[in-house]
Image (cartoon, rainbow, N blue to C red; front, side, top):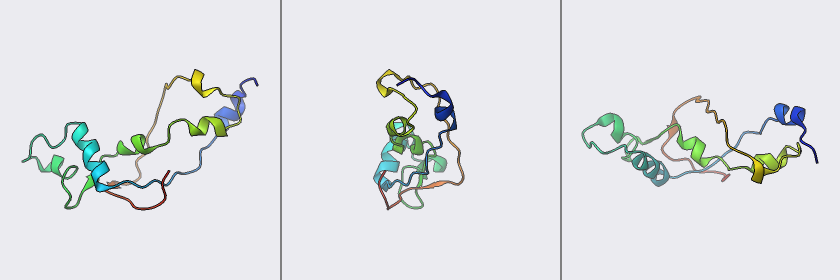
Length: 103
């Protein structure tokens, strides 16, 4: 099946709802080096539970990998794809945890 560039260009992935735990948020932040200074309150809000926030880029890790490539119907062969661009639009801070539907 040849690649349908117009169909691919016009594809819009429906919104994704995903759950994550406080532990997920903290491990992600610690993995990026936050929390190294226990006196830095701006870092502690991402690695300590009271009023915990998730780093905004956690959303890029929670997102499904390449499932959307199969759903476009544009003739894409995912094993031949190269990740060249990714964007993130932040509407509001991510809470430290979110219960709900998995993704």
